[in-house]
Image (cartoon, rainbow, N blue to C red; front, side, top):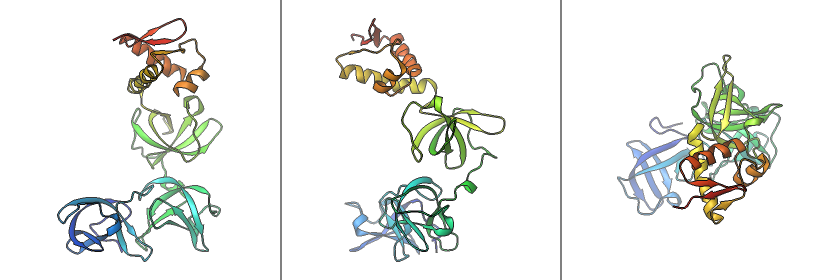
Amino acid sequence: MAISSIKVGEYNTLQVARAFDFGLYLGEGKDVVLLPKRFVPPGVEPGDTLKVFVYHDSENRLIATTQQPFGIVGDIVKLRVVSVTKLGAFMDWGLMKDLFVPKSKQLEGMRVGGDYIVKIYLDEQTGRVAASEKIEPFLSNERLTVKELDPVDLLVYRRTDIGYVVIINNRHTGVLHFNDIFQEIQVGDSLKGYIKNIREDNKIDVAVGKVGYQRVEDEAGKVMRLLHENNGYLPYNDKSSPEEIYSFFGMSKKTFKMTTGNLYKNRKIIFTQTGIKAAEE
């Protein structure tokens, strides 16, 4: 059963209460959890505080670890199945104990070595962390918690005829259109993006990267770095093809033109007939 003041399946910042040869007890009063010796950072003493992840070990004991799982309770992530039993599947989530997916929480059965998008949750009956492949009930656009231009976390969910359906902040769904994609992506990828547009029916369009000139400023640093790495000259300009620009810079031609235009205005580069050149400082 979960301890009231310690959140199972999440990160907790706890004080070191007592130290033993086998590890540390973290917390206060009766609400303590063991951090085994192998996870104790050097030099930690009673009274210090540690950020730890809390879950149940293979013997169903509540345990703390300084390891970082691939996801915590509430997250929707892509994980790989490492074993399958009659009761369910076990997925690697970066900890010593694998994450259990009950058979009733699977869509069409899982196979060893397969990658699946799952929701990590806390089972109310057992108090243990588990995962479910049935994530649709957890997603809704009825009441939005985002607005246009907000930075968001995206998980690529599935491919459609117009782009990719993405999961936004583990709560909502949106569409990343093909004409807004300038990098190789695949289902299960985690991306940083922003809300590009919200329609009247609460359908959301998203884009990858940062919004507006904030993104241009980041790309400007990239262009200047590439110039310095190539003796101050690059054979690319507004006459170069979008494919050439993306292949070398990893950005769209539109972003390249905005970025180099901004650098030119700030007297960082010079346009030549055949490319761009770093301005002399």
